Length: 509
Image (cartoon, rainbow, N blue to C red; front, side, top):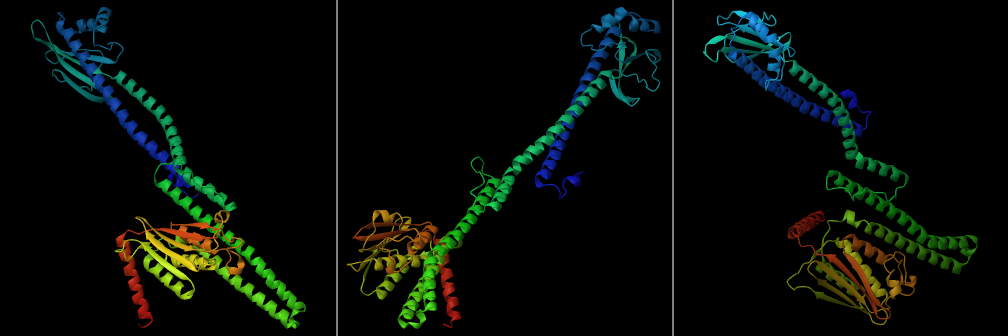
């Protein structure tokens, strides 16, 4: 049965239900058996106390009797109804001599048997006073008491009395206990089986819920069904449920990103592909013989192909940006040096613009570390500065500032160009969104730069915002959490130093 219970054909829940039922039943049987033994012992002790009281009363009555101990007197004594009435009403005597399986043997002072109610050849008489012993008789215990009968007046020995108790009441009590025990045991085993099933059901309910959710996700990968954590306490199953929900959220995020990527690329590539296709059809029909048409079509097609390459690269950047929280969560960058480097690079690239850098942090802090990849922070700054250059009008001036609070670093990029209306600012970070003037295609771009910047910054638990006034320019602000763990900074420096050494060895430096 045990082998069948734990066979591979049964589910884990039913295996646990069976095992718990067995454990509960064994636990009950062990405790109840000890209780039965205790009750038997208590009943036996009570029976011995009553036997002792009965024997003492019998001896007292015989000791007070003035009649000599002979067979006739003893026979009359134990059979006379008046004596029975007197005897049966004596306090502390729960037995009646004639119907409670109590046998008596009387011996004279010479140890000779002078009276017995029934013959007991196997029971040996020993002339001792107040002796109590338990022996087996016909596979049952009997209690034997031996007492000396002392005349109360003369204080002389009159003989001995031996009482043999068949313990009928005791065995009746024990049988009743066993019957009750057996009946309760059957009920208890049923209850244990029910309890085992209930406990297993409650314990495996979250796992069953997980199975149901997985079955639903098989039909709809983007289902929002999740494990309910509102009523659960903090335990291992709660941790498992949280991990399961996080896994589903991550999976849904990947699927959503993939779906959005395909939809966005398909939508944005449709126009340039149609333009290139139109020019090729034109050339195929008759335009290839006209040098002017040929040149115009080739120029337009190459332009659209270039724009498609840029678009695909930006879409790949955006797709990666949406996953930085997973793949780059331990990255860190020294922001002061990076901002100075980007500022210097733009001064070289755009000599007609004036790039002003303002630092607002303690002078003794030459390094400020933030939780972001160096490449990603540099990419964000380039996107913001490129936009500032593109949309500057009459004033070729851009302000770049770096400030630090207790827990955050703030980087601001300010231009004095066209500005963004309040309506457009609500959508300025949306992908493929273009403000009619400030983000028109003739200035380049596909409306993905700020979307990439937003995804990157927020992926590192930072924030990006914009303030703008139409005709006066715009200010973009980035906030990133500062790293205060010195051991982590020291470890990062050692890692970078070792990497530089390895690169130097690789290039023979």
